[in-house]
Image (cartoon, rainbow, N blue to C red):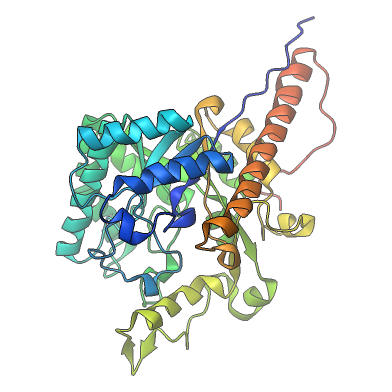
Length: 413
């Protein structure tokens, strides 16, 4: 009889620095950009995280979308108004080493298929700056969106992906980088009625995009940074998504995780369904899209009328909600990842993303214990899943002892 040792494998727990956009006051960071990273690195250690996902974005003075129009304002913790030089990289590395913090990847979340040619060039040029910063910091991945051209069909967007996004992936390949796509559909990105404004929003489109990547020799550069909150938004569940990828031979596509939930409001679904509010939102005024950013924010009613983001650990346990795919079953999420995906678990990142509106406090002292609790919850859930997987799939399996019960099954709920 073979006796297998109990050897659970844990994922790498980190936090996206957009969790507190203005940790360093703007008047200080604008004059000394890398101070924002140094202070966030120290803050991450105080939160109990081991890694940061370093948030990059166009500086507020350069951005095309005003903060008033954003559901979840971005953070430019990594400020790239000036080139990210070796000197800047050395300064950041010293802070990382001093606090024993790593960088999982750099996150730049923008529309890489924007219909405006001038804006598209601006965004692609900024992405290239992000690539360069990755190289100087020794970071091997970028996390972001694909996006969408709102003025045309999804099939036409596939053509645009091939013509304009593939060259970015080729540059990533030359720098030995991976591009991990977050699958948020971004319904509020436009005042039009389109719900899916990031074409890489679901497994069917991931596979279609990856096939294009394979034709151009950049299949290894295209991966998914899976966020279960977006699956819940579209009525999906994690286990079924992972099973589908495995069934189709694409279980390798997921390369990292955002840990953020979604709590569905059953009353909102009753009123509007999963397509969200379709009329009288307030983003159109006088028969045309409003030019006021505060009005444009109302486009997000396509999402917020039926759900609210969850910071892991802040929502009550709701078994019925799990079964209805109306909130994330975190333990099964971590189990399913181990059971169904092709992962090097010990080298896979779990990145806490804080977008729970009522707790999105821009005050360090108030938000710190909230984030500490969430990071601790995420680590504990991963440890529990790791223990269950090692015990059931390795220790018991080696001794041919059956696992009890059935558990959640894909495609069933």
